[in-house]
Image (spheres, rainbow, N blue to C red):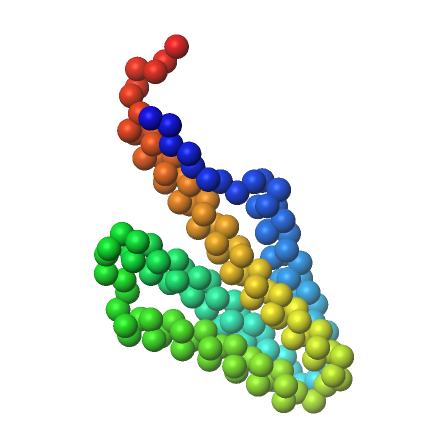
Length: 153
């Protein structure tokens, strides 16, 4: 029995990692040279990290919930769903609020905003790519266990 296992191409995986690295670099440069108060810079660094971690958690939560639904298994608890979604929207909202209220040049705000949204988008794409690779590895392992060992030529 032949099992077809979908894998992302190496080119796609490299592109995802490069995009994520560029997004982290752009955010780092923007925050490192942020004109203004140290407190503003610290707030924005924390906001970016909060957004980044909640994006990864949300991506995992959505993927796990979909997998549970397909398999007819119970998903996470409603409270966990509330915590995940609330954390993501709170992180995004507070970071946006901090960015908008800072007394810096509008062009700089635009740079920080675009690089921040690019980072979040890349985080979701990276999370999906890593999860796809993990699932393909698991499928290959299951397929190799299911195939007869006597296929040696």
